[in-house]
Image (cartoon, rainbow, N blue to C red):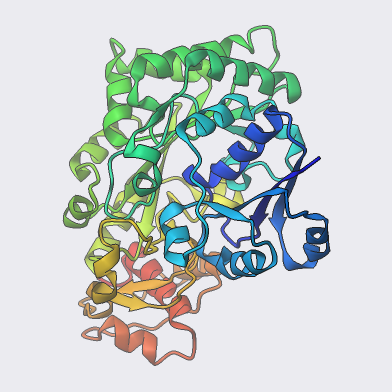
Length: 445
């Protein structure tokens, strides 16, 4: 009997989302079909001997969703000529590897049944499984309402990878069954709704949150929920209640303690280019929930084309006022949504709006970039000139640099950023972190 092999090559990417889930959905679908599935998670070359068990008539699917996987994928293709690759389609096409695109129906079936196979996976979905804040339980990732996003923001690879550029709706009954199964398998666990925008349909979001809460009615502990949203849709969610007080009572009752929102930047011009919500709307929402039981984790993207010292200042000032306290967060995520936490770093993804022109807009530091290590510095920042320096914040600066392992830098007024990083005996990708942290803290302006 032939086997179905699903291989997920190891990657240094800690933060995973969206199409990265496809490898788990594919494994789920094949197991649900009754196939003899061999799922090799976090595969490394030290496991190569197991490849000898692959027969010519076996089906082999290899996931390629991040740049750091490319060399191993190339090697696997030489070793397994019948292999097909899936994950981030534009990158696979650029590599000219045999492309397999999961159909909309396959993706839906994977989401539908994923919760029932989680105990067969070794790693689940990594970064989405911790509680984000200290003293919060482990959470299970779940796409609750719809898969994908059609906004097509300039930097984001989600839309270019979406089959038919159309989101996939998840019936409510499937979401409720998944939630019920999570509580049977791991009583007291939380849930992380990983939809690109969970609050896009307010009525469905409310229904799901209430149904999840009912699973805890006879328990000594309550629900714990994280959801990904946007400025506009979470504002609409709050507006659907008669008063903010009523909205916040509801959030507390259903255990919605954290909403992740992609701020990316608090600079008006840069946000507009990226296709993000107006910053004024983000400020209004942040003020509205300042004393609420639900917190907002403002996710950011650093070193995008157009980033400057002023844009770093703007984002740092916003997060000084509305960001989370890193000491209240799990260690993995305290460098996002915090004043000098730089979030993810810009990557040039094939298929995105700016991809073909990106080389003209900055310096590429790596042909294998990852989200948590700078792989690109825009000319807008490299050529920017330091106008003011505040050297009174050394202790705070040292704290944030310690989280990154980045070096202390001395800045001088009138100097350009590229001059300051070039005189240091450190790699540019390391030195630019020090510049960004200084910009976020307002040490340089």
